Length: 92
Image 1: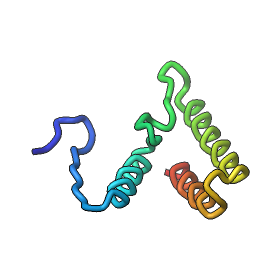
Image 2 (image 1 turned 180 degrees about the vertical axis):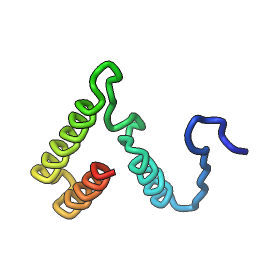
Image 3 (image 1 turned 120 degrees about the vertical axis):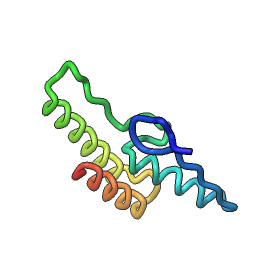
């Protein structure tokens, strides 16, 4: 049965491997531009000019990426991978 949501459809995924389920979950969150907590990665204030809000959101994403590359919390390879994903999100 299709979801009656505004955008998209409800998806149910069944696997026998928790690692596969977790990777799919986080890949879906990333594709939607959401953080692991499920909240959007950034918010646009409708009271402010749209172009200013887009620039602000983009700058926040760049600053976060630079911090991750500098600190490397999960190691250098994961930091570069995360940076690439964030720059793809920025392009979109």
